[in-house]
Image 1 (cartoon, chains in turn purple, brown):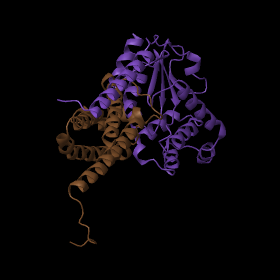
Image 2: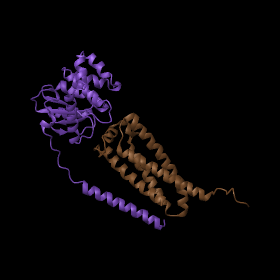
Image 3: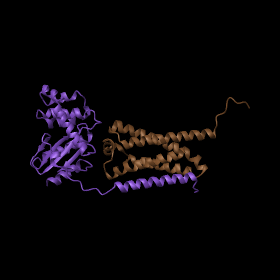
Image 4: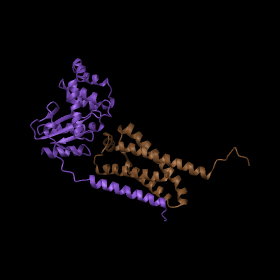
Length: 208
Length: 149
C-alpha cells in the first residue's frame, strides 16, 4: 500500500490524537486517595426522616427520588433491611429530586407534608407504588388513602420550610457529586452498587 | 478536505465511544453535564443483544475512520469506498436515531456524550452525502439543456 500525501496527513492526525488522549489519561489518572467517610452529621441531619435504632453503630443513608424507577426497584430490599435490622441499623431518607423528573419535587413535598402528620414512610411507600400514575392531582388521593387531615396536608404541600428542607438535601447531593439516584452511604462511605443484592450484602456485613 | 473531516470526526466518535464503553464495562461513573449518563448507563435498555450500545458506536466509528484513511491511498479506492462510507454513516444515523428515541421515551434520561455522538454521526453522514453527490455529479454530469449540438 502506497501512502499518498493525504494518507500521511491522516496518519499524523491519528498519531497526534493518540498522543493527546494518552497524555490526558496519564496526567488526569493520578492514583485516587481512598474514599474518606462523609461526616455523620452531614448525612444524618436531625430533621430528616429516619427509622431503626438511632444509637446503632451502623447507619445507612439513601438519597432518593420518588420518580426514579431504580429507587423503586431498591425499595423492597431497603424495607427488608429496615425490618430485619431494626435494632442494629439506622436508616435515613434524604431527598435528591432529579431535574429531569417533573414530579420528583412535588412528590417529595407530598411525602414531607404527610410526614408532618406522622405518615412519611406510609406516603413514601404509596408514592413508589404509584410512580407510574404521577400527576398533580395524585397527592390528594394518596392523602385521602392515608386518612390525612386534608386541610393541613394541602397547606403543607406549599410550606416553605419543607421546600427548604428538600432544597438543602438536593444541595448536599450535588455537593457530594452524587452520580444519580439511588445513592447510598453506609457508615459514611458511598456504596458502589450494581443492584439491590449488593446493598443487602453490604449492610449485612456491616451489622454483623 | 471533506474526507479529512470525516476521518477527524470518526476519531472524535472513537474517543467518546471508548470513554463511555469503559465506564459501562468497569461500572464506573461517567463525567457528565447532567445525571442522564448514569441513568442511561444503569438502564437495561442501553444494551443491545447483551452488549453496551457504545460498543456498537466504537465499531461503526472505527470502520468509518479506516475507510476514510484507505480512500487516501489510491484514486481507485477513493471512488470505490465512498458509497460504503455513505452507507455506514447513514446506518449510524438510523442507529443514533433509534437510541435517542430509546433515551427519551424508554429510559427517560439523556446522556450528554450520546447526544454529542449522535450529532457527530449526523455530521459525518451529511459530509459523506455532500461528497458523494459531488463525485456522482462529476461522473454523471447533467446535460446542458440550453446548449445546441
